[in-house]
Image (cartoon, rainbow, N blue to C red):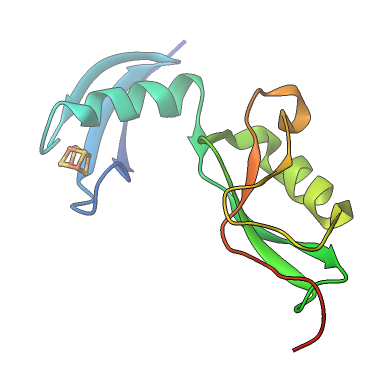
Length: 125
Ligand code: SF4
């Protein structure tokens, strides 16, 4: 496999360093311009197992509003995010929903839960 050098934006903290990464496949050779050592961990994760926090909404049956916002309990494997969003579009829970309630356990077998981020009482406004 060829040695490549590329730029990568670290999204671990708001500083958003532009890292200059030299790698051979998934093997990191050098990381330059990182503001801290977490930059190298970020690069390693991106090259081997990229993940992102996912936030979306799901339908609520009998709720004051038709949708409730949800998020993943941990960063979700990036290649599976499209399938997760499809699963969330199919999902509907019954009101009331409480903030912190698990609305989808072990999403797609990852061990990661999807959690409601706000209360949604039953009934009309
Ligand atoms: S390398 Fe460190 S300082 Fe720079 S964005 Fe990543 S976590 Fe933040």
